[in-house]
Image 1 (spheres, rainbow, N blue to C red):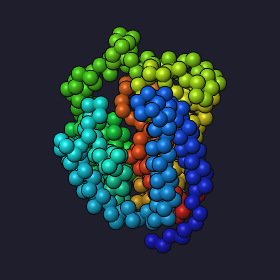
Image 2 (spheres, rainbow, N blue to C red; image 1 turned 90 degrees about the horizontal axis):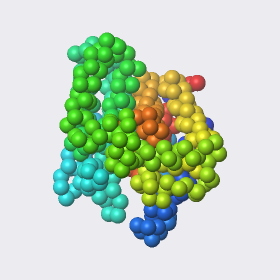
Image 3 (tube, helix red, strand yellow; image 1 turned 60 degrees about the vertical axis):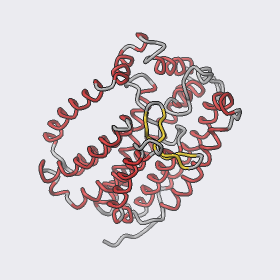
Image 4 (cartoon, rainbow, N blue to C red; image 1 turned 135 degrees about the horizontal axis):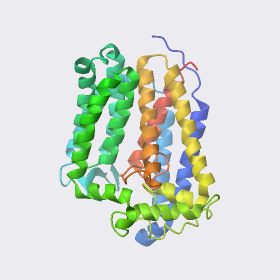
Length: 366
């Protein structure tokens, strides 16, 4: 199929860079106190985030000029490489353990998170499979089972770390892609009941997950234990009011909310910039998702459509879960807020994903 290349989606570029700028400011604001206490350098986290943001932006603009069919060509190799990384991260001495999860591999002074790479690789591979087998997807045995088998194999390996949050995002993203490809609702209902049973078993198998559920229902039952994070998050959001306490004026970042620059950065943003600041960020994400859906609908082929839908679904699910957790609407999970939370692997790969989306936009008709 011949494809005529045009300019990339400028609105998507500007929206992404705006979110990135807000994120850099908030990482510094949220982490300065903790960084000064632990490393005697208020810019410790901000400098690292700026480094990964710079590398990510360069990668985004580079990949924006790489034909997205390249990802189709290399999809099998990419997913094999990611499975290899998921294996070696479990080896003691190679995998680094943080907060009870062995999810990182040390590379010099930095670390990478293989499960983040797997999300992108799985999207690229599944988009290829669905574009080649769309007619089979209505069949449970010939279409749905083969597509989900690999997804749940990857999910199982991620759970060995364990990392329920990242695994949930990956599975949710793949289900959206498969549904858009034309899978039957009746098949999803049956699998959903089985999956719900499995999800309950995963929760019951780990006491800390049970505590997260009970603390979600009533965080004040254990205010100094399992309910501590969500209570401190609500204490941050509440005083923010309409306009916030002012940039840099957060109280909860003074050792009340643990490591506020990561999963709970939205709480600090709401405390300092208020309802208006939080709403502005949510609207930016809504604008990004709208542009992504338009690109998916206008893509010149099925592979481009499925690839774009996968990227947009991944971002949307992460935003929904992160904001839901921070505002007390969902149980606590270790999910970062795209483009805002501190984290090199997550930030860089999100910008790479946007680069792929921008390349698809160069061929889209809308």
